[in-house]
Image 1 (tube, rainbow, N blue to C red):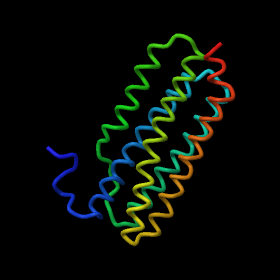
Image 2: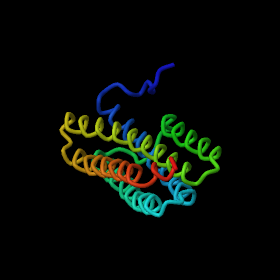
Image 3: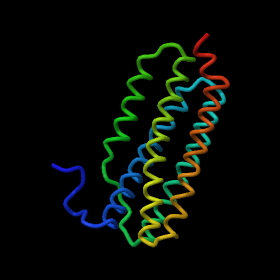
Image 4: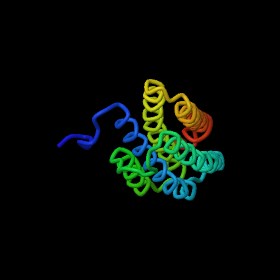
Length: 168
């Protein structure tokens, strides 16, 4: 059995499928972030997660705009990759008793999510352009840039505070 359904025959079909994939992923992230905020003890990390929760809501709205602009039904398709990343994060967090070490694990898990999202958005931007959909590409690029910025913020939080606290 293949990775994609038999209905995918063209780049346009693939574009819509990946759009549905990232739409599902963003909605799963919306569910996971409040739990991560609750588990985080670092004020900087909590604030970073809260800011990204707001951004993620915007990502979902932009994706819905892309669906509309492209004339595709707004729906998600199961994304085993994001489900696996989130499940792994939950398992690891459940095994850590030290709050500083837990913060370091939460950063690592969040960055795994960001990296997944960056790969999806980068691909979707390229495909939208190839399909002549600069309107869609522009919205997707906004999401991509926000994901990159979130990843950089997480690195800064980890390197300036969280990892130092976890190591002591």
